[in-house]
Image 1 (spheres, rainbow, N blue to C red):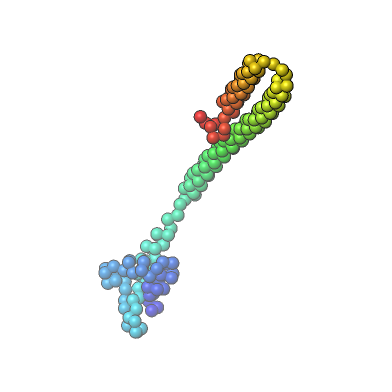
Image 2 (cartoon, rainbow, N blue to C red):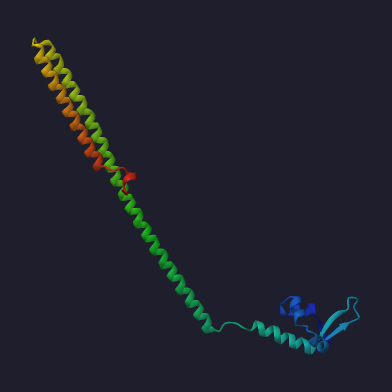
Length: 190
């Protein structure tokens, strides 16, 4: 064994697997540089010193390929450039998202104002209707107590009905105008 090393010893020395060493042991290589150790019961293969040097040069050459300093700088420079570009893209995306959020907040604020206006108009309409009903209730008892002919009473009732109809139609027109000017949030894009 002092004139060679086993496959296991070579694998540990080179930092590779035993299978990688065995791949290099071609028939020609075995004939020239490998001996069988019959002293051990497993008949171990022993690579001669010359064979060890050949394998060492093969495996060390494979590990010597390291990028040079210029290549490291190029790779590092490209990486920095790529990361800076990615960072810039992310900043632009965040900026556009912030603008979208601000515009949506403004739209929401505007929709809330329209909703408040609509609710106020509904309250005003209810108050107007209530006051009209109170006026009609006050006018009706006064006309019933007076001694007027039936025709004048009928005429007054028709004028009251016409007045009620006019006020209701006016109220309806105001509601329609308010509905046209105040769109709901789900109609915002129409």
